[in-house]
Length: 191
Image (cartoon, rainbow, N blue to C red; front, side, top):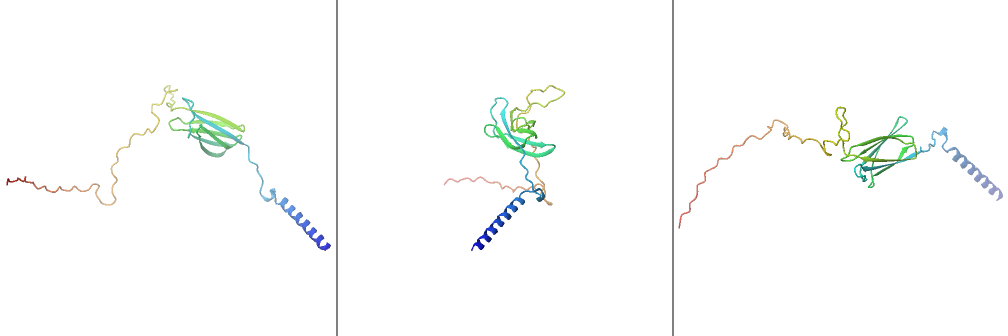
């Protein structure tokens, strides 16, 4: 019985030692091709969008983030503003150059390049109505646009109907009107 017990203890000790060796050697070693790479430091960026003429928040404005890091393009991300006019993003690395673009109906597009240097960046954007285009021939600074916000396309001209396929004429052949028979007035005879 004691011989059986010593064999069992030896077998259990050997199994524990093998399990320990396997778990240590199976960990992420460079010779196995897998390395643990910690996530980079990320920045918390908050963009607050307000109307330029009254300072009220603008919900549902599109805020587009385009990040680049050391000349490498990290892609674009569009975030809509919440009811308080804030767009928040937490996936841009610290040290990135970020192009922020704000688009809203009835307002001029806003764009700014920022450099993310810390763990938090707060930006306030005041949206303005469209202004006249800058010209070197005349002074248009702070001059309101001639065109009003909205669709500025002229109305479409009426296009002729499409030609039917085959040898069919474009318009049906004129039909001859049915001859009209003169109606004679009926006179009622007194009875």
